[in-house]
Length: 80
Image (cartoon, rainbow, N blue to C red; front, side, top):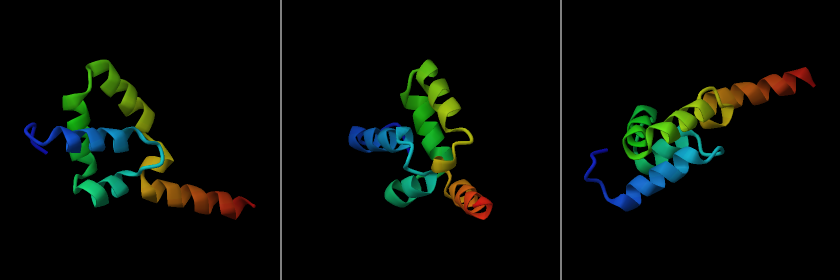
């Protein structure tokens, strides 16, 4: 995504990225942006402290990665 993208699209990407329940795969389906491209947008558009807070929040969060969520859910079902 280039910096000349409409503010509406950038705003939507940022909103999806901050939402815990919206995985990077869903963001790709909705906007066409890969995880790396979302990270690039967030780095460019957020203040450095906000970007660091966001990265810390999403790193390893199972709900942001569909495969991790599926693995987590299947693991918790095996334990029951």
